[in-house]
Length: 392
Image (cartoon, rainbow, N blue to C red; front, top):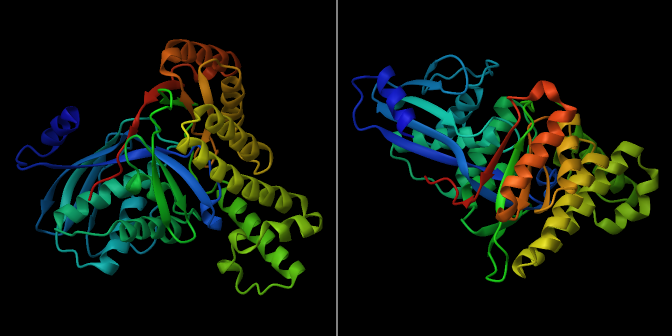
């Protein structure tokens, strides 16, 4: 943070009363690729994320730069381009539009943001949006409920940026609490923060960054969402259920018994995507119970199974992430893990025994770079702890 403030003062030497905002990254050990189908998820915020330093402005201008991306972006708080400009600031423009639809905005801000880990797989886009929204709300003296913040951030990605994601990322980064597991039902937004059982062994969260960044815009992310919705639509038709509009259908609407009855009628890809959803739903419920009981071994095993299903049923995961996953399976001290995020490049996460940190880093790094030597200097390993969610 000190280096960020120092750079901010270099850019704005007359700035005073500098303010700051922070949003953590998140990991989802079990529950991936199901929030957009109103499934259940688990999540942990981590003690790394997006920092923003800023000063409010009375002229309505938002001028923002990043330590991670090139270019200083500038726009008026009440005159944001209605269509995305295809640069990193689209997340901020969209967030401004979504917030201004609900609350009057008078003040802009001069701001500088920085991410503490490489971009990709930790819901960095949601963290950027939420850290920025926190700063913009503070600049305009706005106090928002957590549910509204999540909706604004989700609308930004869905409507402005064009990613058909659910609310997993935003919810994890808002609701999470240190040393607790977030257990969330995305159908009705009910959630539980399950405390770490006193009998649970110590753990940390390892992040293995593949060295290859990713973007969901233009990836197969939206296609996978459509395949799940198509499976839901077809299953409802086979069963004679009311299926309504395609845009409104979700697999959560279809009981697992209906899927088992009609799954062989589905095209293979639709069936495999649905198999991932239903099996992941069950894994989340088992995982929440394992965490409640302090059974980190079972929880980790379920996380590994989640990763396997994401690779072979949901069919995401780049070659790099699959390699890391396979290495993790054979590494002592790792309870479980999977690739983090959508699986299009990015990183893998794991729950680990902290006493094995050195050997884990050594083995995963050596084995990975044997397969991808060109990524030496880009691949990195980071150890994190659980953290509280973003404060507004």
